[in-house]
Image (cartoon, rainbow, N blue to C red; front, side, top):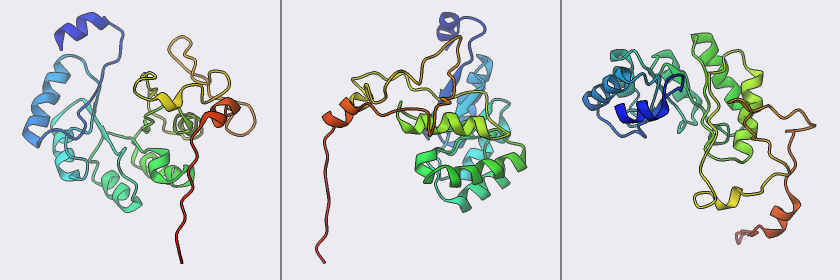
Length: 202
């Protein structure tokens, strides 16, 4: 980690995702190492369904413990926020089933005084919807999760939209302000897409 910190230099925010990888003792141990290196966002240190484990890690650390990308059940969100299992909530617009349900989670978080840094794993409509969401809520977090994975990792997302709605200027992207979601699907992408239909016998 010190080598990474030196390579990035000062003034660069450091965010770490543990991908549900640690027990409580190990999660706290790693979290303290991250704190010493100035990391400010420690995502999903424990298996995400073990809210009490994540809460224990969050209670032991100063670094913001974050999570929620996997969670779709509003009752689970209500419990997670009420017990303050995380310091920053990370709903995924698509996993939750759309903006209406995600806005309910954001409202719960706002009432509890928690910021929202949504999960958005690829450069498709999930990130477009997330950009609009962050512009519409009173408690957006400091960051937009903007995927850097290239064509080898997500080949299907290449040239999905006309233009580049994810252009980064001075470290920020702009929320599209054209009609609808502000983006247009590339007709060529649609022409190249593989279509499948499923049916069931009655």
